[in-house]
Length: 175
Length: 320
Image (cartoon, rainbow over all chains, first blue to last red):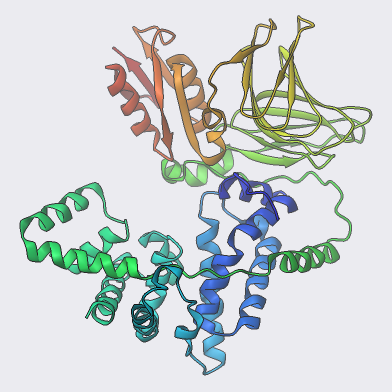
């Protein structure tokens, strides 16, 4: 286990730009779980998701000189992941199908299996575009502005999709 | 009220004004409040799922791939591309700034010294011959030999954060009036106007003034100062963030004299600032600024100190 590193992403990016492998490793340990969750939950294929995460990090290293310390490296990685997924779906005709299986049981709702099922179904039925925006906000803590950059849409569209998503989820979870 | 705004509030994305708007709307009627609460409840019902990525394995594979493609990774001083901390403040001068803010990187023959100089408004990280790294703040210079022999000695004028690799060879930073010695650790050195300040993030650092034999040992979380080559002294209750926040783009002042602030702003924003009818040494400011345009920074400072600030002839002037 690596001890948690307190350096900010910005500091790490500055070091990575200069070829600091140690800083790169810290970045890797910091974000692989998040990236994996993001890719896996849209793809439903564990092996491919792992490959994509690895590819994204190798790509960052290869293009490290072009990293911008003033921009969020986390948003940059998610944007790369998002583009990779679009490519993936363009090539193969499979869409995400098993979101409800992908979401693990949440310990918070362990004593309420009925609610747990409703939550899973509600998320599963969310249209892809809304699910994407919702994930990035709820699970990954991105700002609307960052989500807009990752998905290459306007902030207004993000707002719209977020409110549609939450209205949809409310309907299926609370009613 | 539009659901968009309520959701925006729940996602913690509203501005202060919008927050007030939402709060007022909720207070207006019971139905409104229930509507908001049901959205919030939905949001909270959806927990963040956790996935464990096989990191150990994954990293080993990444490291191997990198090493196989970069078989000979010797130290080659690169001319780093300049980049700017305060993007918005520089937007208008983007193209000009690229030309003006040049890195002066002199690479001299072997066994001689390389000097890295950062221009105003510029920060640069550099890897030293032993694998240690230094991040230079704006308007600073760092000299180091192309190869370290018995000791790892570098010279610093300005400010830098060091991440020193562990080695039996001592790592020594020479400033104008002091010497900082370590074996391997992470720490910040500030050295300007014949004053040296050291703050240690991890490890142990020893600090001595140029004109004394006395040495001070600093542990993680401690800071000390050397003035005019005199005895080094601990800074009681030092807050590491005050010393290290510049690495993440913040300017932090803690009872800092206005004169020193002006120097720092000139370095960070590449501007000229003068004073009129006031003694800048007698005012102090406490506060921090992150990614704020220079006009706003100066306005905030002047507002706090009850001073005036105007811009004329390409220069800012602070007066009473």
